[in-house]
Image (cartoon, rainbow, N blue to C red; front, side, top):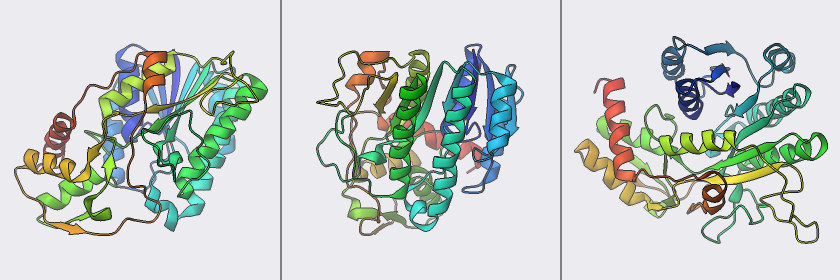
Length: 335
């Protein structure tokens, strides 16, 4: 297939592009290479992709309407994996406008490109953040998610609603994946594992929010990538049993789906830190702080639907995943 991967220089996009190329698909990657975090890391990921047969890259911003229109018209993609977005819960409090441009305007441009060019299936990144104020565990795609706690979360819920509109009006098959704390080699420097590792190796204290009383459904990148590929191959279909009198938030009469994609084994933050200390062979100096605005205490993915529909089966324990990240980090930064 010819597949567009947006955010191809990003953490998840890079890994997805690698897997698609390895199985023989043609991949066109786009990314705007913004400086939300170190651009050199994005360039290093691209440097591994660009020599591979079947890969082409174009520097392009999702909110460039004409550029996206031209790309879709020229390439005629079979399928699209939209992983480009302005990420981060805390950053959305300081820079709200960037989320509207990338996650709302940019996503609309992707939907329009798919609509007008007969794309067979759009798979896009949603987020566990959409669960917001929900406290029932585990989080289920059949739960209502109308109480986001950050603009980032609201933008991801908006993506799901926008996709549903296009699935309904134009019969465009769309699938949203609610990612749960993805980690692993080539990860994002703004996420906890990267920040903790860097601070510990530099002998600096790590910031432990909510006084360490978080539980997170940490999910290893290889498990995430496998789930994305399986979902891409499983084109969204209408749910024939869907009822407007008792509407199921996770399915539709339209060819539209949302899934949780996580490890489904929440880990206490302090246990996560302990596993990192073990891999590094060092003890972290910890600065305990209150919960950050926009954060939630716990995340826990119910992935039964994804297992049932595409055979998703996460298999990487946290200890193994952290050790692989530390090996990569040590090699990449030569420490």
